[in-house]
Amino acid sequence: MQKKYIALALLAALFATSEVYAEGKDGLAGEVNGVKITVAELREAYKANDKINSSVPFDEFYPKALEFFVKGKVISQAAANSKVVETEEYKTQLEIAKEELARKLYLEHELKDKVNEKEIKKVYDDYKTKFKGQKEVKARHILVDDEKVANDVIAQLKKGAKFDELAQKYSKDEPDLGYFTKNMMVEEFGNAAFAMKKGQYSDKPVKTKFGYHVIIVDDIRDAQPQPLNEVRGQIENMLTQQALADVVDKLEASAKVTKYGLDGKEIQ
Image (cartoon, rainbow, N blue to C red; front, top):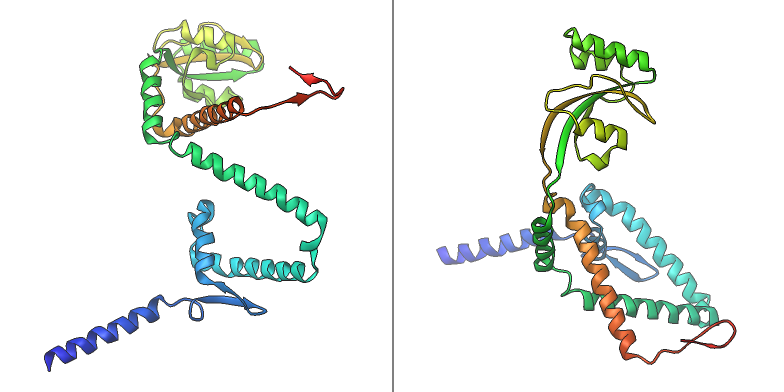
């Protein structure tokens, strides 16, 4: 008797679970002239778009996406009924689209094994090994338009005024520049900042195309390689471009290619 009740309980739970996970009307999101649109299709579209699925929940995406799918089906059916698929224009564009899709899928397949985590790590490790340590300076500045004002700021610093308070009063730019290498700044600024010691401020204004700077150096350190997560995109792009060039070069080398100029002569 106890086994019978357990079996009934499990069966009831199974039906309850099915009801919880049933979406739409038996899995259907809608129909357009008998053509079905499934909730699964909408879910696939949602999963495929990282920008959307990372910011909008599926239940918010669903009604707008359904409208989009419905409109798409309506237009597709109208296009089919108009016999546009029988036109030469359609057939020509279809061949172009098929060729582009075949190229895309072929190259994706060829590049799949060439741009992977192992290769990304290899390039990054090589980058770290070859990284030439540069000096980085952490500095603040007070930027003004007039040299006399800059000299007055320096005079106040010499009397014990606080740099941040003077920056708030006089500077037309944000004071904190963070860490930077010499070549990241305009030449006059970079030369001045990297000639100074930690804790030192410029004893005369530094003129650049932006105006007159009073600089204070807060720290000096050896530059560090960027973390992998910050350069991953660049490495992936570089590996993809290299792999793509290799694939195309090999294909061209094995193909018989003849090129002609506008004058009809063969291009050597």
